[in-house]
Length: 319
Image 1 (cartoon, rainbow, N blue to C red):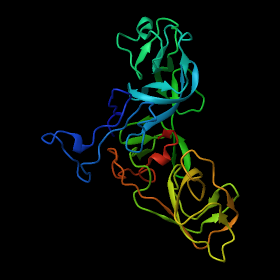
Image 2: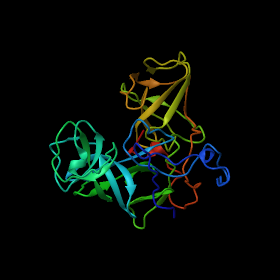
Image 3: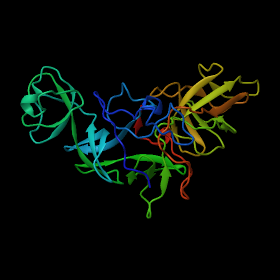
């Protein structure tokens, strides 16, 4: 069924497991179908400077210390229990004794005096023994239970993923699978280290549906955050247009129903592109294959679900 979520600690914040090439040659065992540049494991931690498709960060929504918002998995504590850190920022002088925090900047604060130990570091989780003083900052941290609801009480978290043309709350997460909230739960193989589809798929019958970068097509399984390569030149029969397009251009999917509609931007987190409604005769739209390192996700060996989930299909993933 997949081992529990695996976390490797770094001196900054959590980062991915080493590739096989970085392991001792006398002990490394490379699984069939994998190469020396690939590695196993799922990670957590809230350091966007190291979070990439090679070292992803698992982001969730959580209610920590009564503060609800975006948060990150630090480590797994049980089947559905996780130590998480919020995205909020609390300045020294405003800590609540008895609450846990993760240090985000040391500043001038004497962290040792308020429970952080003798060698405080950015990323350290501690339980505050005082309100603190100085310019240091920290985020709310604590243990949260994974629930399948959008309404969260203190100490609860949720994760959403895309599957079968819709979205679902995760009821359980391992280093191989995500389980939805159905009864009995459906199991999906999940590969956190693949940022796109492994085999390019050409989208058919693509038309521009709105001036805000919205398109329609006849394909299925378009993932949120997926990369779309647009190539070719609009012909004289084309009635639509993409502002600023040059041949070829790779765009990001910012919204999709997972079936036949999608919206594009020029980069991750950017505004949607500007378009003119109409057909796209002369252009080819295709998903972008990915050769980045992968986790221990099995090939689709399950009976329920549509196939391996990618980073793009886990809505709460952040890079």
